[in-house]
Length: 54
Image (cartoon, rainbow, N blue to C red; front, side, top):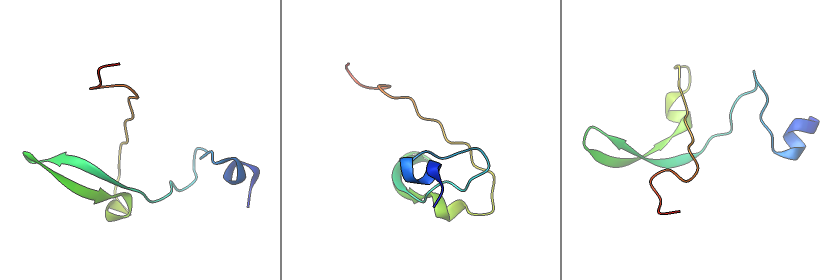
């Protein structure tokens, strides 16, 4: 295990860990997993605090 893996960081060029999340797809919500898109290009965006009343 590398130092980056031990600290929980993902480095450029490493495979992202699999996760499951709710996604809005074609007018409704559904559960998706990152592994569902293995072998395809994927863009992940994370905006902490978006759509909240903070």
